[in-house]
Length: 184
Image (cartoon, rainbow, N blue to C red):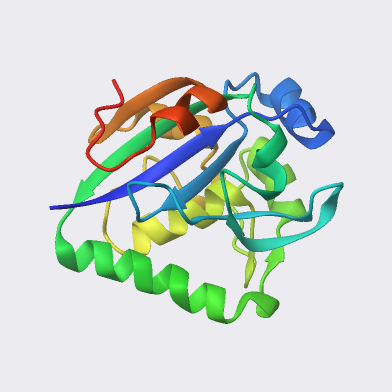
C-alpha cells in the first residue's frame, strides 16, 4: 500500500479569514503530497507571498515561502492508503498539471459558487479543495460525498478511510516530520 497525504490549514490571511467567516470551517486550505516528508506539497494557491492573486497550481513548501512564517497556524495531516496503481494515477495527474501550470488558473467564481452549494465545472480553473478532490476522484482513490466543485477542506475530516495523523499547530507538525514517525 502507498500513502497520499492531505494537509489542511487555516492561515491568518484576509482570504482565509473571509472563508472562515463564511463557512465557520476549522480549515480553509488543503494541499496534497505523495511523500511522507510532505515535500513537495501541491495545491492551488497564491503565487506570491504578499498577494492572494494571481494564484494557480503551485508547489508549496513547509520550510520556505508562505509557510515559512506561519508556524502558529492550525493544521491537520491526513493519510489515505491506496494501492500502487491508484497512487501512480494520482501522482501522474498532478505531474501533468504541474507540467502545464501556465494553463491553469484559480477558480474565484467556483469558490463563491461552492459556498452557495452550486456545482460548476470550469475548464482548467480550480480552488484548492476542488483540485485535491478531482485528483482523488479521477484516480479512484476515494468516492467523494459530493461533486469536486462543492468540496471544502473541512469536508475531508469526515470521510471514512482517511486517517488523521496529526492535529495541532504547524510548528509542531514541522518538528515531527521524519520518515517512519508516528504522528499521533
